[in-house]
Length: 342
Ligand SMILES: [Zn+2]
Image (cartoon, rainbow, N blue to C red; front, side, top):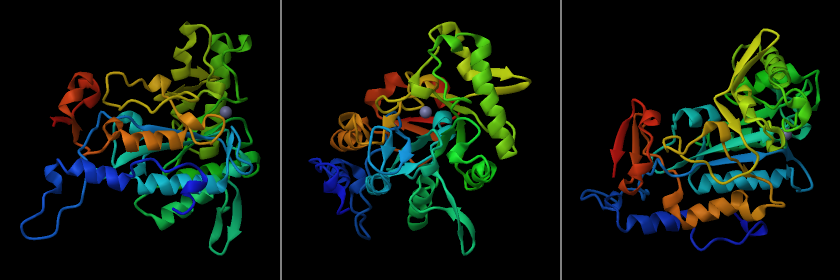
């Protein structure tokens, strides 16, 4: 963690310190009569908020729409050390949060399918992701930390994802084969607030054409079920919002379980009554120009205010919440899971 100070000042509390403080009042920390103390673990809070990170380019220099490879590596190290584990966007929306007890989910997203997100190079055992691309960095981190799952969603537009039409199919299938996901980002990086996208037909065309294209590359139907708004722009006519969620174009239908914004605070828990997957906020991973509200800001904030953070109970069958938050829970979203109020 020697590089931490090159990006920001260390907050007053680090994760280990936070857990130690929490455990002063927690039975979880009680020493077992026959052995050493049980590991320090914060209490579960599955109504806490969840960080959904939005990255674009991974390259140099650092800018509003680009994060350096070293900075992405740093983010992953920081997330890992502070108890975050990636989950699939789809699982987050569904409330299927499979991270160990005491840890927090994080969702990683990359918009625009830039060439520096994913290049394939020849390795001794076949084609592999180039090391300084987003995919290469994620894979290397996962290899070194198998308990940090390879989960990320790449939102792609147009017919040349990752900068090259010739390798598009190979790259899309590479991602899917390794458990990562692709999402829709329209066929032409469409600003849906512009007048030319002001009809149901125009919206369905730009989303539906891209869904058809991506699913053809993937060789699988109905696998593109998340949508990231370009520029964060929605249709001006609210009556057209429904076409962000579902529609069809030339016989190809699409259906989205989530529509992602550009920017915003951490997302509500999927069990919170305020959770809205049609307006999912994302936190910028890049350092500029919004470092004060970027990823590192929110990591520090959750470090200082651990009660704000989603902390898993480690059990997919239960939703564990503090009694102070009970009025916020959505029982329909808890569904068949058992609600545990601490
Ligand atoms: Zn974009």
